[in-house]
Length: 435
Image (cartoon, rainbow, N blue to C red; front, top):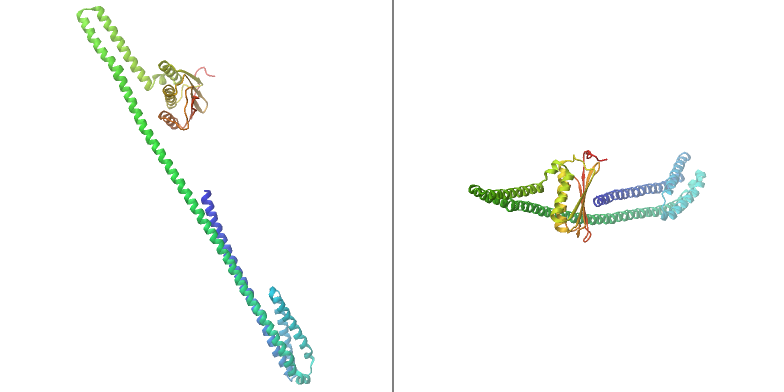
């Protein structure tokens, strides 16, 4: 999420920054264009007013009739007013390089109008006598000078336009570099994220394959365990029960012979032998049935079945097994009783066959919401983080099937502690006499 989120955020930033930069470029270009057009229009207006003012002065000085001359003078004053308004507006748009030529143009226009002011008081005879020399020596010369200054300002205005274009190009170049860097970074992060994702996916695939192989191995081992169990039962039936029954048949034949011969003491002895063989067979069958599933687990409950199992293990192996029970209900679910019984059975088998333990303590404790089981031995121990046989895998599978938790704590030379916690969905009644 962090990788893809960061990549999307970077792409969104690139898009937002691109839109902002393009809008800035467009606005800058529009401002430069509008400013240039406005400056050009004002300069053309000033130039036109300068040129027209010379025409009005000429018509005023050369007009013999006073009424018409006054009309030309009025038009000239209007032109002066328009020119001064254009100058004031252009002053607000001045750039630094234009300030000096603009001040020169303003001074020249002020001198131009100062020269013209006395002419407005001339009489018709004065205009006729001095008009043409005045036009030639003052008006036309000054008008050409002012037009030259206006041309300089226009050239500066065009220079400002070119500089604006350069600024726009620089802004666009900066945006292009920034966009290239962001795209490169995005592609780099994308490739890095893809590599990490591929590596993670391959790791998960390898982990899944390892789990699948482990499950296959476990399945094969379970099948082998079932075969070993069947083989063991078959061997017990053949070696113990079969031989005992064969002996019963032999002794029954001998008993029949003794009866026909009328040998009462021999018949009685043979009958005792038959009885012993039958009792032995019954004991073997009972032990096998108890190993498969003790009837006392159904008849008496979990704790008596565990105590019987502990006595049997102690009797067969010499390992001292002690069972401690605390508040264990007689109404536990069948699957919980079976699970605990099989876990203890497998744990005791490991203690006898592999751990070399002398003492084992089995503790069963019932709490309101769970059933706790611990099996602790004083054997040689093992590395619990690396060694896990089929028996422990079977225990873990049983416990996980009931939604419980399973853990083994052990180190070489320090014994082992097996812990199981099974959830109880419904509260169980306490055993009789429990407080």
